[in-house]
Amino acid sequence: MYRGTKEIQEKGRVDRFTALMYLLFIVLGWLNIYAASFDLENAVSMFDLSGRAGMQLVWMGTSLLLAFALLKIDTSFYETYAFVAYIAGIALLVITLVVAPEIKGSRSWLVIGPVRLQPAEFMKFIIALTLAKIFNVYNFRLMERKNLIIVFSLIFLPLVLVILQSETGTALVYLSLIFVLYREGLPGGILFMGVAAILYFVLAIRFSDVQLGMLSVGEFIAVILIIVFAAAMVWNYVKRRETAFIIIGLGLIVLAAGWIMHFFNLPVNPGLLALVALGLVAVYLAYLSLRFWKKVYLYILLFVVGSFAFVESSEYVFNDVLQPHQQMRIKVTLGMEQDLRGSGYHVGQSKIAIGSGGMSGKGFLNGTQTKLKYVPEQDTDFIFCTIGEEWGFIGSTIILLLFAVFILRLISLAERQTTIFGRVYGYGVVSIFLFHLLVNIGMVIGIMPVIGIPLPFFSYGGSSLWGFTILLFIFLRIDKGRKRA
Image 1 (cartoon, rainbow, N blue to C red):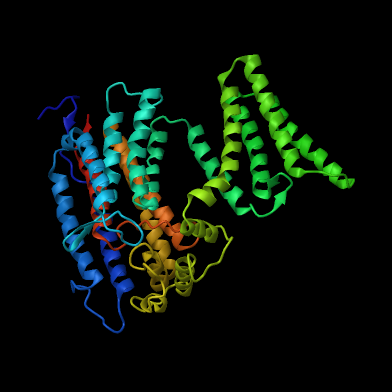
Image 2 (cartoon, rainbow, N blue to C red):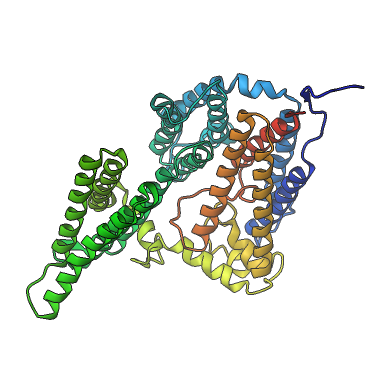
């Protein structure tokens, strides 16, 4: 049959490799949930519906039915009803905020008889679909002011509602979709500012106890970084090396003068000197902006001023905005507190369990830390500690490598899409899975704060498994239905 060069609907199959990896993950997750919830005194079969593993098996079965149904729906359906799904999702979040009972400190679960559902989990794929719909509008340009406002509003509205439910971890997952915007034309400078903000916050909080005159040690280091960042931005965006060297020089001269004064036992205020250096850099950038009438100098000046304002506000946010338990989690992560009986207990016991697994692990159902229930939430958010204890370093590494292959495959699928809708949604899927993986593993091994997000396909729970299944199989359906010449 002659097809010519006209684009045709692909009659291919679902990407088998990704589908098989999904099946492998949910089976491995089921085995580890059984191991994590195994009770030495009241052992039940992994098929017993009274146990966690038995219930997870039910969720797995319904997820497979759900995946099959999603693959049967026409691709155009997902694009056509993306906005409708978004409005329904927002309405559900509002309802949840009003009527949901408080469970473990949050109001994010709708209880329907014996079933508990977390609407925030389903908003992940809904936001990704809505962004894909927006980007697929004819002649859409992200960097137009109106479009930027629309896109960020779509992300921040559900984010605020979920934060009000006291589900900070899930809300942060929504922020991971900013990486999609970066793929679609958002300047790297905006992403850099986000990374810089995190760095400033950590420095300002971690080293806030020791003062150097007018500034704490953390604020002092942050000021030096602001000057270095300003010079690097001039070097990168203006291509004027001599200007970048002058900016660095202004900072170094003032700080060198302070060191000389200290050497000769003269009264010196390091914090004040750092502020003087930053002030000189700001004045110099303002001068360059007025002399050359280049907006880029003004933007860098705003970055310098905004960065310092952010540094100065970090302690206020930490002490007066964050809840005490959130403060303690951050302090434990940054090594400021131990609190092994409080906020640090989860991570402390998790690290003991993982470390006790050694190179090859203790074997299936032989983990002592997990079997004796020392690790809280060990079959949900801290499921990875069971993997570390029973499978050891080798088994944990294999799981991480499998996830790495899975993420790379999703990126490959996203790049081969022939529509903007498919590509944007594909990168939304990648961003959400990658964020979950990095943050969950990070908090289990103690390098990130405990914010309570599940490990995809491994953590116990119907809402999370359904959410990840829908997220993935919508993408696989879009990929199957893509057009090609």
